[in-house]
Image (cartoon, rainbow, N blue to C red):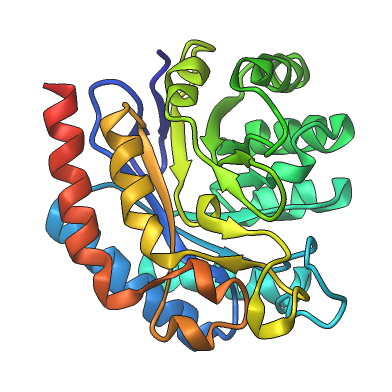
Length: 283
């Protein structure tokens, strides 16, 4: 399996390296909150000697309702992410939805993320691959809920044909399981690693109940917050190279996907357990 490195930050993911933590907020709500969440998680990761990448979205385009909160948008959102990166001295991850966003996002984000629903969009993959490779970052691609893990070979080959020097990471985030539900096949992690890339687990979005939030009568996505640690631990035990997690100081008041995110004060306990599991598996 390939090991890749963010050279500027000396952060590596893959065989022989510590568990990589990509964690933060679902979507930027304010610069102040982003800094607070990032600072707390950075401190926990530093205590545990785990490589840390701060994540937040500037726009959540795939909302259930047109009235749902989406974020500050590209211009303001990238400015806030750049400020978080500067103040905390930490690498940044964020996702894109459109081809024209690739270059400006790659100029700020060290990890450019492709949302699961968009992982088969050729133009988006090509643009993101080229922009990310040119900037020396990672392309983090979430496997679609409708895609078999071995079919991710087409994503990897597409991206590398566009940018041969690209560093790419695949992400497992669950598969559609009937209506309004997802299930995670832990065997998918090893299958995707066979493609020669590191693999992360998005335990946050894996517990989503799409279009099934009872608080809004289906106008937003529900979730099973208590399942996040279970899926994260199972995936690390199955060999995942990194974890993707979202936190909030008050999850029930989060402006986006609150039912799926964890309380910020739970981060240390969970990451400590995940580190121990990762080290046990690698031994």
